[in-house]
Image (cartoon, rainbow, N blue to C red; front, side, top):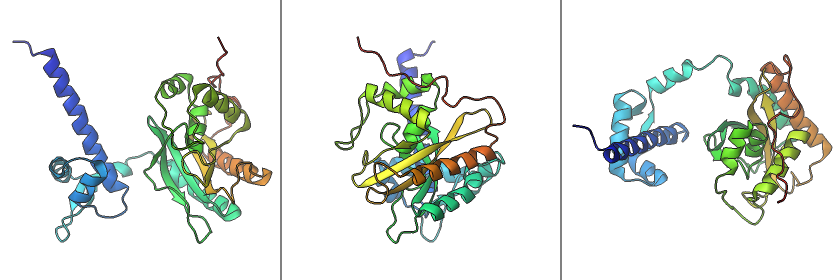
Length: 279
């Protein structure tokens, strides 16, 4: 007897939600930097402790997480570490580490490395500033495409279909400085592609500015963003030429390590957005 298609759809939807929650649990523990308990996870993910516990049990049973018998808290398990070992030898975080430290030492600002996900710019790693007051973002955070320098850089050099998909979404307003109008964003993406860097002064958090430059691979594809973060007092909305040059220079150093420039490429990608004409 054929199964009801609506029931199949409901089951598929429930299955997708279950997978999403399992990944949310795994990511929350991986990016926490410490062991995490059931109650803490449930509050962070805004779900019931029962739902979290069921997923934790499965992930521990499969080896992706471990549970400390003394604290009953959870941490990354051996199978998660094994998967990391099978990642490609050329790792963006490892390749960028030395240039990131040099950039931090040269400018003094916090330096951030990000890569693109469907939801935004994923923070891979950060190097704290030389200032006694640290300003930065936590690894594992996903920054919005339209309101972060990293997100705008990644979007400016992304293929046009990706840009269309992201700009078609409802864009969140974080404060009065957040740009959410599509025409304004598209015009800014063109400027970013031409000038080779982006900035997002106070677009998410008042008092904070971020600048980012693209990182390319041997095919001239944008694979990441190198950014500096600081207070608007020390990283002003109109940055000086030395700061811009240093940021772009170290992003280019990382790009060269990935083979950028060895093949034919364009300064501005063919898929760069064009501001829509009126009418």
